[in-house]
Image: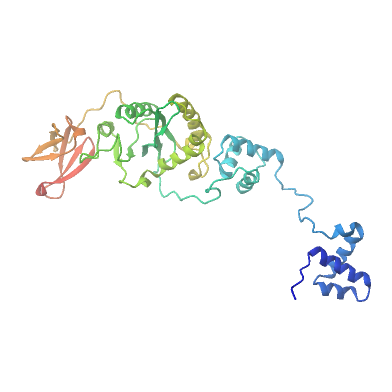
Length: 376
């Protein structure tokens, strides 16, 4: 014989029918249906007041919620979210506080407001972010530089977005829509940044054009110019983009908050959009890696000013100086040593090391390589 299934409403009605007959005590009726006497009396009272409709489940929602977020606050949250569709609860809360709003709920409640209004989507919504492993101790100790992957424009051209980020503050120093990745283009943009913000102590970049070389030397004419300015130049390990992790993460933010949301017409229109967003990123957008401070609040320009003329190259009195000739070589102790074509015409110093027969090859203040004469 198959089981007979009954709904909750049918069971409650059967309980009331059993009570109505009066053939057994009320407590025994409750026991037979597995409910307490208090619940039984409630069902009797609700049936007497509303009939069978009174037996339906009632909402457990409280009649009054004094801590409920007001519609005005929800409207402010949604309004700011519409202006910045990629910002989450923490950033929105901090920005609203910076704008002077009070009585705001916690960040997790703001996240629930976004979810309730259909403003959270995508696979990363609500997922934890990777920890930041390191940062320089002060602004301008290290700038990270890279081109974001180029993309096509509606006018038929291509845009190569040059970005430079301060490692300590995440302050964006350069955000330019370039038509190419040539040395002259990058040098022009960097010169403007150096005049505005001063010179950093070090710059790191990947091994691609125009700052990488495949000629047996990591240096190009652009990196030689940077070293002449007294900037230490370093390159990321090949196929290890995490070395440029902060700038790579900046590129993802740029895609999420701007480039993935606007038409890509031409360089002029893109640059206008980049200029507007750069102000938001540096001065308004709370940065989670900075404990929700803005990059501008942690950045200050470098005291090292950009010179109108390149400084003279001066080596120590005990250095052995050679000039790089055609082909990118120098001659030392009857041996031809390759130092790179980017250094042709430049003076190079050979500086002995504590190891017998080993010399540092120095350009300006930068050790470009170490040679061992016994192995040449």
